Image (cartoon, rainbow, N blue to C red):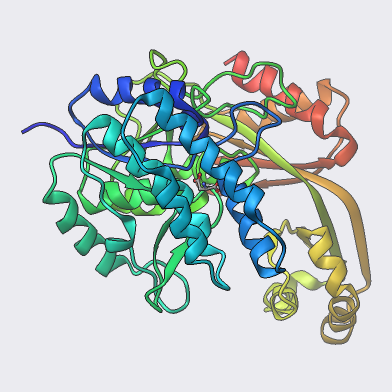
Length: 439
Ligand code: ASP
């Protein structure tokens, strides 16, 4: 039996007719690419405007009773140009007219039309049937995905079509109206489609040749990660590396379906392969990637004989939880505990947290250290390898960086260091050069 590939193309991959032709060539080059999920046309150049943003503007103007005819005309023209250049017979005007007729208080309906119209155009160009996401993707009352209904219904609809083009970004809300995911949500639609048809692979076509092993704004031309596990991806994404919508991983991960990030403009590149395990025999370095974020602070609580006081840590963390301040890390010493949190979130609750710590725990000292950046060195290959931490600290000390916090999970998947925000860029470069380039 032939494989099933769900291929999702992002906004920059479909920004105009020439990009759509590139995507079509990729689709047609492998008949296993059966279910195509599309974004709305994105930016054609840095100062261009995405169709989705234009649609949100349209809705804003409608709500404030402003004249929106120019915005509507601009949207119509973007699609009309695509249709003209693809040389297909498609009535853009009646689609645009329908949007204007159905505007209401919800921005979700107009926002979703970017992918809806694009999917119809691309379906026509490819000669594939169009399947509307509203018929297969359903949300619960609390806004989360209704997984059982979605996977079953969407699966049944798609199994009835050998090929299909599906608009990304939306489904049907609990009230029966169109509801969108958060921005960038076509990635989620692709993942849901892959899960619903139990695909062999979920391809995510974008404008980069995969996930980078460090932030390209800090490290010059960082290496592309060839393969990465879902767990590593989660760690790196949480620490700021972004390549996929966060919610796009869960549906396929549960079913063990791998994701392949590919570049529409360089289809010959292998991209990044994301899966549950890296197959035996694949050579990779111990460290997969480095990511980090600024904006943390550490609240250090010191009390002599704390070590003998059962429940001290639990009480301390409960104070943060009660104030709705999630903690990131919690390194401990014999008589100290530090709680690392987002500085802005902490500031909003500072008074009550400090008061409660004093009243409940009666500490000797409380010290607040600001301007902390956290950096994660992530790699499943680090587990059981001697000297990894030594290399991290040697790299940092070699660059003249003082390490202010250290945290390593017992799974040895990552080593997290806290450094002064002013040392952040230097640290990322030093770690990249020592842990990824020279492995
Ligand atoms: N078009 C939507 C956005 O710009 C969704 C997507 O492209 O994934 O956020």
